[in-house]
Image: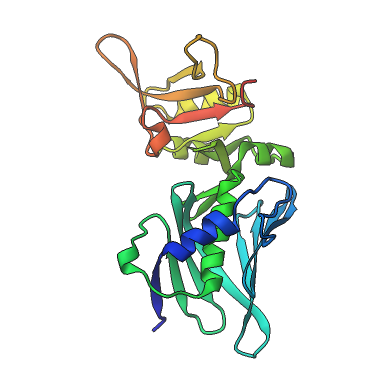
Length: 277
């Protein structure tokens, strides 16, 4: 049976996150000790490096697939300074990281959990795992990506920069730094996603309106609209969108279909276009 070790972050791990991975930018960075770097950041991938004493770790995030590759210079079973872990991330947002690291040498599993961290359940863990978890936290801290329910989403700016939009509709989620985009969707799958209470982003206003109407049990899309500030003007960085009408109340007002995520519980969104400037 594979050994599973629940990792709750102790003070030493928190130090890794705050000191080793401090002071980062989206191009290249080192903290004052010179032991953290962004080696690559292009439309295809981002590669990070961290070091603690004699342990060096490299984490690579594929922006197209959301896959994470993680390697260290720890000794493997053959005595070489090269160890690889399989990384499965369940959640990675600014609220914390939940990820499973599997040592490919012996199939030993480690669960890194900074969401439900509790010092009273702390275990002594390999430095390589602590560095791996901290590197994932640093990736999220850059505001380039998030992972929810095992699905990776990249920031809208990263997505738009790639300029290879092959679909009319995409998975979308609001979180922290703004709108994040996931995989492409057919029209029917985009409609199903809205019906399930999850947001979408579409390339055009008409595309967004179409799927919002088709997701509505009364074939009605509410909008378009955009969040506004106290001055009554649209908020910079926000997106125009439609809501899905669930029903009409006795006053003749349309009631929105509620979303399932924290940021869309007042109505699921069919976003479109670029953010307001």
